[in-house]
Amino acid sequence: MRYRTDYSAALLACPPDVIEIAGWHLHYQAYSTHQCDTRAPVLMLGGAFQSFRSFAAEVDELLVEHPVILLDLPSQGGNLQLAPELGLEQLADLIAGFAEQLQLPPVMPIGLSYGSALAALFAVRHPQRCARLLLAGVTAFARPGARRLLEEGLALLDDGRNGEFAQGALTGLLNPLQLQDTGVAPVFRKALLRQIQRLSAAEVERYRQNSRRLLAFGGFSAHPQCPTLVLAGEHDHFTQPWEHAHFAAACTKADCVLIHHADHLAQFEQREACSALYRPFLSERPLPLRSPGSTPLASEQLLQLEKRCEPRHTPRQCQAWLQHADGQQWAVELSELGFFGGRLQGDLPRDLPLRGWQLSYADLPNQALLPLRHDDQGLAFVFPHTDAEASLALAERIYPAPLPAAACA
Image (cartoon, rainbow, N blue to C red):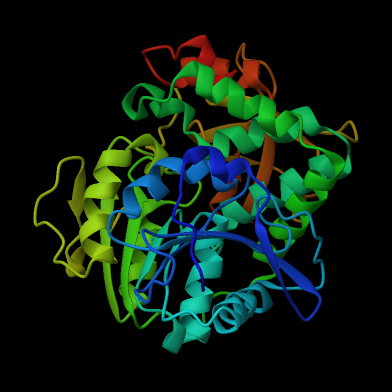
């Protein structure tokens, strides 16, 4: 491997280097302080809607102590090659092929969101090629609510309802109830919404394929054995803190740290708190016992975290109507209600369609609803939050302090 030594953030927008493995194109950029560097490189694997330019600050900081490689596999980042036949496991194997072809020493992947699944699988399937592993936004996708939201997003895209898809995806990435705590500026939120709304046809197809890979993934039959650091945003309701903690508990040598004032995009929202942890971890130094902006979880806490990201209350007014797109409706009673979902009781048919539901409650705009479980306890459901005005009205009803209008816009 020959590294570039002239790094600047502007170079991240330049055409990448490309290698081919069995007909698949892998895009990368590689930087170091000297061309022939035998140290373990940091390997950046991003999530949906991220490109090399997303990591300008991280590359600049990491280069002080490490070579840095940014990698886009087929259908990832700026790599437009479609690969519907490849599963997550085959993509993880391509990372190993990349390392072999470029004769890299064992690498240190940083996997974020979608990239976390690829990085973790690479570490499991090719342990001799993985020195250390850092994950954030762990996408194991075993939680029924997360799967239903992902499936609904794909269905909306298939229906051509891209605006509703974008609104729901944005709510998954940025917790609208915690914008003041996470410090997400309205201008950033609106810019991200516009980016998702304006996905090209090719970008939409890549998103479909990547989401289908996650849904088809059967889960981890084994977990990483190398030193692993898992970072969880305390307000992440899409890949929740308890899921990060359970993943860390299953690893051989893992630490899990809760990042305060952060949600699914912890590494961007609380950059200093995250870098204060990954700098020593990647350099094989002990993690600080106390670090501003984060709390390490003790091993006995990993399987004890709360599995609900918000409190659910019995509303003062319980009566509501559940309506289906075919015209049928049922009188129901809400036993639990939160911004992200709830539970209701009613004389409902046992086999409910998966889509086409709306909840009519009090004086609120109708809320789109996705059924999860229907049993003796009633119907558990999640809100996909595909309508900004309806979401804002719901939030203002549930929480005493109204959210700013930008929260759900």
